[in-house]
Length: 397
Image (cartoon, rainbow, N blue to C red):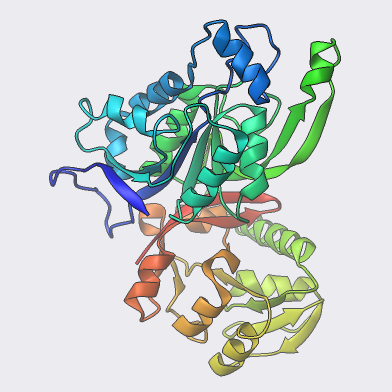
């Protein structure tokens, strides 16, 4: 449950045609991040270290760094809907910005917090924020905070770290608050932003205090890359386009899980996947593949629904060139009930960068015949554009 914190005025108009859902950003602060640094404690992990730092009079700088980041987003804040936590894990930042940005929209989670928050509070906050289905989850902290986020992060959720800690070895943080602001502004304007996997690492603080630097790898999270926005792609390069499709197909084949059933949609780009597997493909239909074998060729809607109702499945679709539809044009086998059964998180969109670059407004479209589902599918979605190359692209109904 969320409570309104700031309400936008009616003058807020989004200059998008057709309209794209306002970017939804979940924000959580670890207010204790970095307090051990000024106290020469080599980190801030653990309540005893935090207590030492506070006893020495150290003041947290996290809220100010986040406020600085959001202030730099400026007028683009009107294109973002924030969901955050009670103070001291987020709400105080928006209270400080409300007067300067009357169009700022933010809701606050209804969750109790102690004066001095812990790792468990961060994990609870991330779980609660993800229930709001944010396009981007922003967290402020250090490597320890990144570990807490990683522990409970849903598959496919894109995150962005605002650096506020002592130890900053993870590859999931912007270079500084200004860099994070540029990413937020670009996404709010519907620009295509590259998404890559960033490592979550942390230093063993006890060893660090004894002069030893021992880092450990904990996992990876999807992060937008600062200033790696999509550049103009030279048109007319037929061979380059073909190579890009081959790269997409090779990456998809490499990532396929033998326990999952794949619905390969219509179009030449999805067809390249079945071709790479050495299987026949239905260019204008849906083929079902699992463990490198063709289960169904040119499958019907009822067959897809029956499969999706009893086992884990993923849909592979591409955008129609010049239009941008991923559903509702030439792939009606993907009905609303099939899409719901498979789930948005199991939707794999593939397209070359040149195809995305040529789309009107550089956005994807959905037209499933179910307005509620169309709305649920809007927002940002990862699009595989090459070998281990992914961009975030807005979806409109």
